[in-house]
Image (cartoon, rainbow, N blue to C red):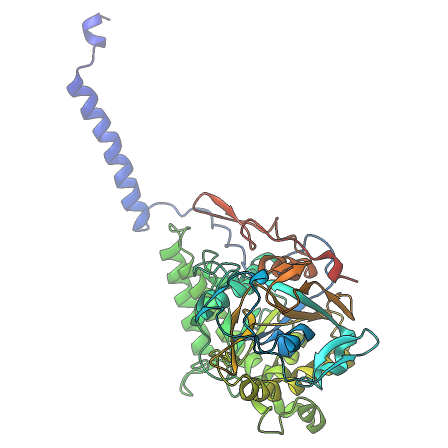
Length: 476
């Protein structure tokens, strides 16, 4: 065979290469239209809500977060400051430093609390007379007196208390819990949100899944009737017909989604359809308070106008915990109801009246049913209030030192952790940042916050971003 016969021209090479590429294209078209032999069936995608094992033995199975929206005044509820009475009406001493608040600077005068204070229980935890019912549970609580956050306004601060960031876009804590542990009840959402009045400041971003798959976002419930609007199909559509429609829709969606693994929205929609179908039976039953006795309803204050709305939500939280819902967030004063820039006496009197009995009823009921051992109850808002007045009879936002408490779920009862300075402006001892609160809650659920990670934009993200420490002293 001659050397000339073996030689290939550039034209020959391009012609042969083009034929090969054309063959690939033809095969793709034939496969798309179903003319090639069928492939082996692909394994179904893993269920993103399947229960998963925690990192270590948990002390809690569920979280009930009583979100006191608007900024409750620690100085009038949990943190008495005799020094404020001594300095009443005086400018804040320079030794405490200049403070720039949401509404200006610390140019107003110091304002003492008008409340009557007592120590309660064997633990001697201080509470004001605004919380007579909760005071009966002092020995069940750990009060954190030196909490601090980074935001000055409600939008950023409510967002941070939910997501650890004052900037929107990160997953809520409830979403991280779902991502880490999955669902314990396939017929109900694992992250439920209940509001009592207006729209939560910042809206649904506070229970968004952020960059996590959309399946993990929170679900807002109504507190009567069908938990979610438009859940029930028209009466003309039977169960068999609805099931067939959902199966067809699921098949079409999965076919469309098969080559788009990075897009979680469609998968979330499919899961939402299936969950909604299952919830048509489980959801209304979960919120059906006719199953509760009159004594139980009275315990929560449902038979009183002032406490009926939040009491209903607290009772729903107990019912959801019984049904395996992992994370329930109850907003008290949704729409910044506790935001007392003026008339703090009138504002907090009203808000405490609406929430004190329902919260005490919740703790009593959980304890009586043996649920408090496995349920971590968290009380707190986005920040506290300043020791100096605003507009004469109100208090400004204070993210530098405020109070929160936890009860149940393995928390050591009857103790106070941390302290603010003499006037309650800043945390000075055993300070507790928002990220520490989140790390501690995850720890109670058996999750190491450092090891709960999700790869996003090339970075391994975690619930507490890059900080946060478990408050070991909080646990029994």
